[in-house]
Image: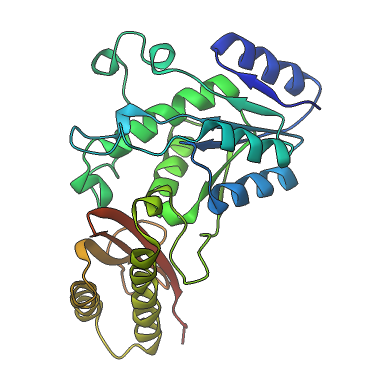
Length: 286
C-alpha cells in the first residue's frame, strides 16, 4: 500500500473507517516528529502487531509551558517522512494547531488525570493535561486497535493507560522498551541540544540508575537512603535534579511492603537540557 499523508479530520477518518470495515487492525504511534531510534522502534513494533500503521507528527502546544522549548523544538518533517516511508507505514497524520484548537487552547476542552501533579507534572503542570487531551483527540479520530509508547516516558505511559481504562477506549496500550545510545543515554529529541561531548557526560545518568538498581536488589539500604544517594550522585555528575523517586510500577506511588515491581524515576537538567529516564527493578520474593 502506498503511504498516504493526511492533514484533516475527514480524510483520515474515512481512511481508518474503510480499513476497519474490512477487518484490518490499526496501530497508532503518536509522536512530535524529529524521529530517532526510539520512535522507529515503536513503528517497527507496530508493523509487527497490526495490518495498518498510522504515525502522527505533531508538536502539541498544549503540553508546553510559557518558558519551555515549543518554538525551538526540533522539526524535521522531510527526514521524518523519509524514515517512515522506508519503514512502509500506511499513513502519516500532520494536523495543524488551527484544526485541533480552532478556538484556541484556552477555549478547548481539556482532559486531566490524577497523575497530573506527580513527578514531571509537578514541575510542568500543563504537561500531562496537554498529553491527555491530544491523545484523547487522536483516539476518537483514528479509533486504533492499539497504541504504542516508549517506556522512557513511563509516567506518560501510565497516564495513557489510565485514560484508556477510565474512558473505556477499546484500545490496547503497548509499552516498548527504552532505546538507548551505545553509551546508555536514553534516546530523546532533546539530546540534539547537547554537543557530542556533553551527550557522553550525560550518559552518567543511566549508570547512576544501574547502581541504584543493584543496591535495591541487594536490599541493604532503605528507599529513602537510596533516593538521597542517587540525588547526591546526580549533583556530583553536574546534573540539576528535579526528582528521583523509587515507586511502584503499578501505582507510581511509594512502594508498600507488598510491592516487588518497582521503578526508579528521574528527571534532571544537564547543560539546561531536561532529561528523563527510569529503570525497572524486580525484587526477589522470599
